[in-house]
Image (cartoon, rainbow, N blue to C red; front, top):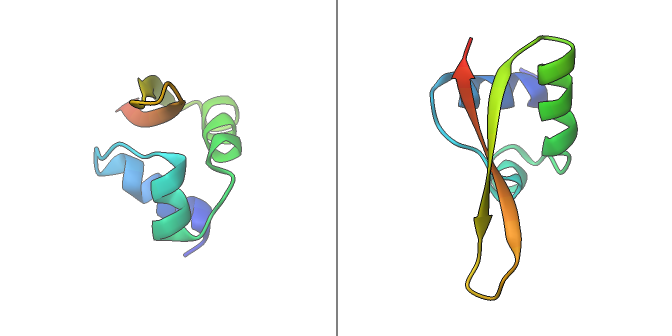
Length: 67
């Protein structure tokens, strides 16, 4: 199974995914590029929510809306 397939399976299982989780679980550092590919080429409806840390940094949390 490819890294992209692993990410797809993760999203299909209705679990949110962050870049940090993607690095640790799937050893893949370019989650945003996979999300872009899934949205544009495979027409997946993926929601992006911005989370803000206590020190003011932010990160994206991706969830699959519908398939």
